[in-house]
Image (cartoon, rainbow, N blue to C red):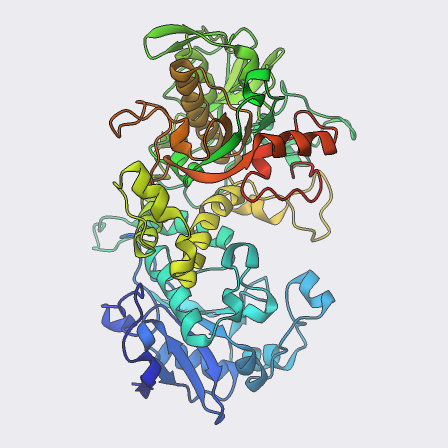
Length: 598
């Protein structure tokens, strides 16, 4: 057992720290931040305030110590899954001690690793340790091939090599070791031990909850074998449909070189980026109020039936809202000025609404490819659909439910630690949200990382080539993963956009109010008052059924920001852009330059 101590400042675990692991194999938690104190002693700061002495004099010795003595790691998240490898975070002082550079050169940062000739890489090779194909970079994985059921692998995280992206982890890389251990420890206990960026971890979480294989029942000789795990994406990648393939995919090799695929050739399910000029009546109001859907894409994944296997091409199919797939169908006849809301037909001002069928909110002008939730919504609005063809997935299931549940629980638990609880009344909720990040800036970092895990994990389902000398028409590395599934990403985005449009239509039918701008999960309305409660139709504390509801749960909304109508008009005039998307700037009102929506 390694020597341990608890410095005076860390006698008690700080609020919100995970309990040290109950599994005796991992009793010191999932990870440690390794640092060197003023006296030259190497210390490992674990979760819950525990500090261990580290005797290791080199990186190979540190890997050995981590696996043999440190008692770090995390139990598997699913029956047939694998335990999480221990994570060691190296501070700048630890990098110096172990002969590693404190920062990568520009060239090293571009290739994402130190050279193979570096002395530490050679030390590892001499000690029979291997590195993955990614080499020794910000998230290095050091392992020996598995023998039997045991895995020998350690994950390194090097913050000063930009392992912790400041867009998602804020200033976590600059935190003192014990505080960084707390931030990463809370994330590990509630989501999973980080396996790389938040995007990589989001994708790895899907696999950890649905491992591709499981042990079979014993055969006649009592032996178990590896077999497909039902409900998972399996071990082997499947080809996407041609319409689901991003430009440059090998499946599109036969297309002319500069051919631009239109909506009838390419599935384009993306988040909203829509805005319109304000009406005269809206210009007489004083405020623009933005509301934002919590964890919108997680909520879009919840309960969603997605394809598990490969697509089947069908000509002139009958549309089935329960069947995941991509459908070529003409939805240009859907008229938003007369739609069904529930069982009633309602008349709306369709010119003030975005189309639910395109990211830019334009009405389609002919056949286009759509994911199942989009076509199902056209039917829900009261219109007939007749697909021309489809790529459907007969093998399907609710693959993302466990993923959603884990990320939802992580988000709600961390927001509760920050004083924002579920089931608050609307006014209390708005008050609790005001300045919540200042209550515990470290836990606010965890919230940011959880949100990035959702968006990044879904983005990874359609990862594009990352340099590596790739040329259009050639396969790229991500295509070899079973989790490269652009159809699943499209279905989640489709469902998220449709969920938002349904609320916008409900709100318009009931109040006569229409959005001025929509960006992804943020909607801006003109209002007489500064608060969402000034335009959301609450009665006796109860929201409009099926409309916007204030609250912290995924799918409910929070206040994004309020600016004046005069601000909105001035900004649009300054950039000579009457339909500039004000949702992009509503939070703090700062507009540096008109951005192109990337």
